[in-house]
Length: 287
Image 1 (tube, rainbow, N blue to C red):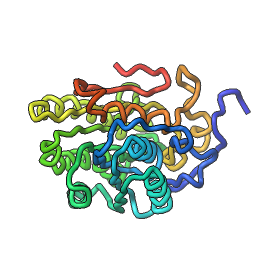
Image 2 (cartoon, rainbow, N blue to C red):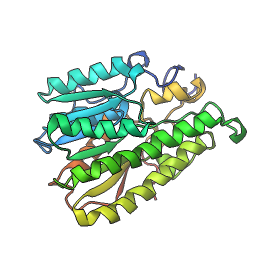
Image 3 (cartoon, rainbow, N blue to C red):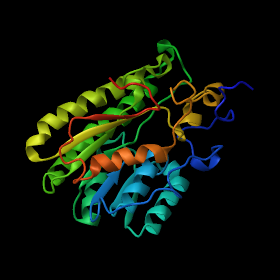
């Protein structure tokens, strides 16, 4: 073993499950304390079953928001855990097993949220897909490229399109999940990194176009964060050293990213913040 080993070597089949990870991620279950910053709001989180999405759902619930979230059908065990955690925070929760690579599923996610809660205040576009086990561009299958772009970009645009009429009524806000990969792209994640750079551009452009409606649009750019996506899409030897290349010399936990989303969602604290990409990267630069 060398000094830069961060995690035990491990591998899962995508999309991966929290319970099979060693160690399991910290989503703030024991640490996050709310202060009523989102009292009475409705938050829709895509990919809210695990990782950053679960941490955001927990934090927003403890800040007083009701939560709707999407997940894939095969992520049901993780989704059940998120439901329990939100309910323990005393908030209502609506889980939705949906494949967001389908436009109809994105429309359904927004409509069900509005039907259940009577409106929508915050859209968190968190769901994402990557695959880092095939390194050369000639190994990128059509299915891989299609899944990456549809999950990361198409779904974001479909969800925003469906949500904007409801967000205008509040007015609400949109928070996109970008990545350090937009700034320091990995060749093994060529397609994923391209979508994250596009998300940065979309964030700034949407902020400009929706600003007159009072809708704020921002993004969070996480660095290496310990989520099921990592053992499900990285080679085992990469998992061992995951996060070792950051200035802080470690991977982050989902619980360390969620407060950035809460800040950007807060109508009191971030009322004049729009068109911004907030880095949570362990010291890697986002410019």
